[in-house]
Image (cartoon, rainbow, N blue to C red; front, top):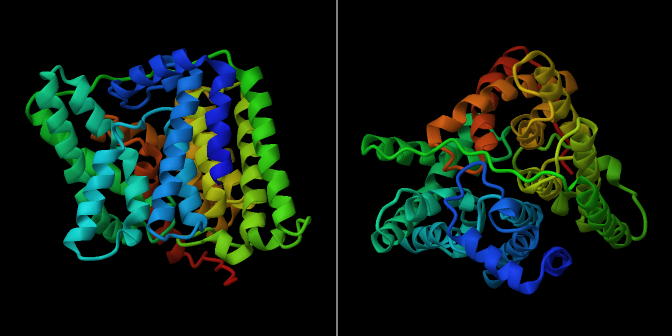
Amino acid sequence: MTGFAVLLLISSLFFNSPSEIIRGMGSIMVAPSILVTDYMVVGNIGASFFNAGILMLISIYLAHKNGVNMNGPVMAAAFTVAGFALFGKNIFNIWPVIIGVYFRSLYQKEKFSKFILPALFGTALGPLISQVSFGYGIDQAPALIAGCAIGILAGFMLPPLANHFVKFHQGFNLYNIGFTCGITGMVFMALFRSFDFENPSTLIVAEGFNRSFTIYFSVFFGIMLITGFFCNNRSLKGYSWVLKHSGRLVSDFVSLNGFGLSLVNMALLGYVSMAYVLAVGGELNGPIIGGIFTIVGFGAFGKHLKNVWPLFAGVYLASMFQIWDVNSTGALLAALFGTTLAPIAGAYGWSFGILAGIVHMSMVMNVGFLHGGMNLYNNGFSGGFVAAVLTPLFDSLKLFKGDVES
């Protein structure tokens, strides 16, 4: 895992010089960062890759330092953090949330190792810190203090809320922290609006890099695939067992099927996700690559080829009849991050996964206003509602197909 983070760091030098990367990192750190802010535009490609590599290394270090094994959930968290480091997370805005979660562990007199996942995934609220610190036009010193204090408070709130909200969707929304952060962001945004603070609608995305990124990530996922192949005794034996899991929380493919097969699954998901974007005429940029990286990460923690394609199909079909173009940034993000509902396809069948994708497409386009772009995992927020509505209906029809145990 560390190797992939280092690869991102080194790759940054292929796109920009060290001085350009430093300047780009400076711009990234002071950006309000609300959805959707592509760091490839705010800074530059090299700076965004460097930011992703650094944040991924920080994630791995925090897990290692606290004695947490490199299991499926941690791998998912590390790649998710890296992905969103291309459009919303940076080396400034992740720390208040992490510190807040750490304070929660102290308050409950428990080891921080139990709180690593909410700490890492909880950095979805990075824009909450950045927007208060740099986006509302408040004097800089008090704005920074307020932004960090609010981030620490939000981090302190996350663990008990996340434990509670998983019951809401019964584990069928893989981005449980995304739903939790959506609720938290919604509360803070409501408070801000009551004091006449509003967030602008933001869509800043890069264009024109499909050729170079296709080559780069084909190599990146190729390295991952070959590594997984060798780690699995130079074979793909056992991969069929990965496809038998529904993916419902908690499905740790590393523990269930091994590190090698998990890497193979992650690489294949990376290729398929990138192929979908290119096939519909989309642009590979910070947010879209972030979506691909998140799918790749969750290839160790609930997603596989069999349970993600119905969500792609559902969002694609929805875009054929709804008002959003299939290759628009919003529709592509809905398709990629909509795979948070992959357990529905895994547990109830592909046709119900397609239905979930259709419903998700409509839902996700309407919930972002509630948190004002403060929650980077907007699809996780939407996915929680979709799963909470659909799964009881499917259960009432006795459609659950079950799951394998190992």
